[in-house]
Length: 361
Image 1 (cartoon, rainbow, N blue to C red):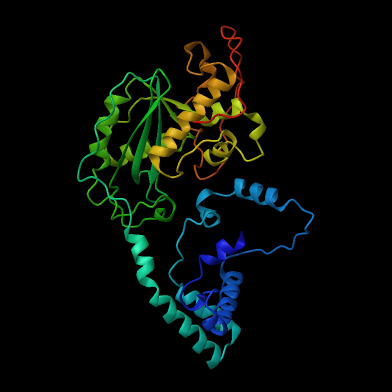
Image 2: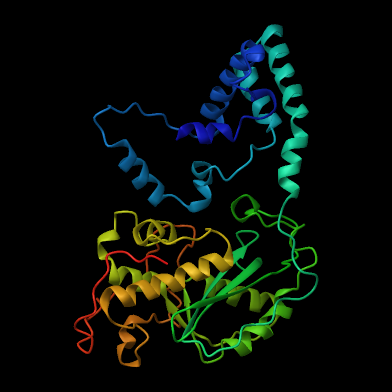
């Protein structure tokens, strides 16, 4: 889907409307500039592949290896960037273009600016947070929780949203989530989760939200999908000068590895891969939705193998969160965990319970 990537630079002097026959001549020049720009500055590698190759599978394998923020273009999540003027100028100088080409791309730039109202309208229709407070936490009892965070930047302390999936004894799930104002000047991941400084301008701070979670999750089992969420909570606590809550952290990645080992090297055990494999329905990169997905992964594993991994007698399925070496990079679709994952054993008390290869919610 290389054209999705190219579309991110369909901007300014490189912009072309391929459906506009009246501007085709100028547009063709702009497209040529865009292709040259990508070759100069994006470290793109173009490979000719034979028609007999399973290209779809090759693409899936490549995407499974890439950080999620590096493949957002492949999912049509992003608006085109603003024109990187200095880099475009450098490419134009290399090409040695004359007045005719320069006039054509300048006309394309003006046409692009004329569409700015449409782009602006899309960007301001962001979610808005409730002013200064978060919703009350649901009332239990709950069997376990799953927690997910979104961050504003690469700094894990920059939490801008927290979501918690609360799993009741009958396995129904109730979602709690809140925006958080991380008070940062730069936002690196707005393109991924849609949250910006404007979204959280009236949201509570992390120090105002933590007491709600502290009481609700005390002595409870809390799942995360990889170690990122726990490390973000710790980083935010340290940045705010707060005590770190001692929740009973577990890892749904390890549960998924134990339940579906066939996914290793075949899409991995990230949420995007498990979404396809298990038929889960959720909106990726919303903290509440991702938390629910992690909880559903655990429930699917229980149902597929007729065992509850939260059985106190099966502590081998939990992760050792005091091990500082267990610190994965969340952006990877398939997180590499420390230690071997243990296989689920069948529950002999329920011999007639069917095993599921997929799980629909």
